[in-house]
Length: 470
Ligand SMILES: *Cc1c(COP(=O)(O)O)cnc(C)c1O
Image (cartoon, rainbow, N blue to C red; front, side):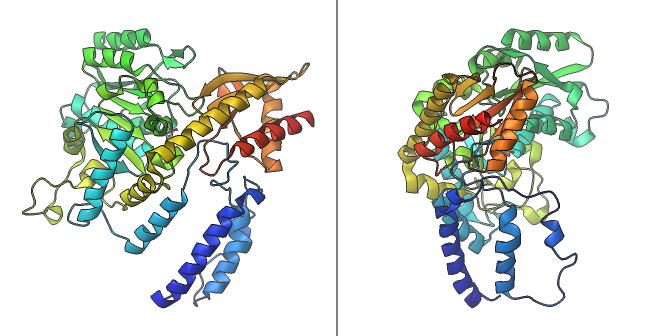
């Protein structure tokens, strides 16, 4: 393909994209494919001779599209959203065309400076004070890994990178039992070890970490020979049921103990652009590191994670390596964002955030988030008032969990899993399950960029209709 072919095919692709999204409601949300069905249709080796673009596009329609789960479907109520607002898809088309590596200031000055500016727009939008610096990471998992590596090196006075962890004290990191698995992964990768991720019990309506238990766990470790507390990971809007720690109370402990604190607000952080929700993370301005994903609810197409740091020097000191070939001579006061992240190469992620924030304005995005919260609350109220249904965890923003509990049912876990499976096979909506205090329950979150109030109403109809057929 040459660029003249691309001109025509690119226009076709834009038409295809618009049609795909306009008619998405007619497709089942979750792929209805069986394992192995797609791979069986794919040749075992790459072709030796070139094939036509028409043949490739035909296979895209016939083979690939039937095996896709539609994350941009307005009735995607599973997991958390991975929204791609139309304007962010457009921005990504430009990024794809430019295809720059944005690792150093010099390799893409505009990308670096736009990243600095858009991160600062986000910082202000979510109510973080001046003084936090932002960087765009590929995912919240990476941001959390960066935070855990910073905790480790700060606690060891940067001896870990140099000497390895052998012979060092046992580093201890504290988090509630509700944190995302990306925290476990970061602890594994950082060489700290799962056994040193201390799980503090959570309780109360917010399923918050018990701060007294946190204080006691740290004191117990300080009393042990060879143990060294290194940091705390707090969560705002946990993945299972929206668990939210009392950041202010956690910070009281952290400051007394001089521990590094990372706040995982990967999903719920987007809602903090609405001032009325900022009370949820009161005290966050005292944390060292905060992550939120514009690539979830906000609508900046995956991948786009904003990571805010009170003192970026701690992270840069942990990650920066400057061989001669990466030095930028004669340019002082510049930022090389590859020193703030694990991979060297970096995509131009700031452009879609810039397009998104400008094309919708913060007010446009606030309205979407407020609507999702309102509609999810209304659905929770309707289900609570419906015989044989109970709300298990009340709405945290737009996320709640519920359970089907008909009279006389014996194995409620199996019944609820069967209900989720039947709903997803029906295809009009998509839901997932989780476990709350041991019980299998059904999760609902409203968050798709194109979701309307009618879509949420349809969720009620589908859930109750299918439950009645069980
Ligand atoms: C989604 C999520 C993550 C992981 O986000 P990635 O960007 O996919 O790595 C981490 N923590 C929470 C609370 C999440 O909701």
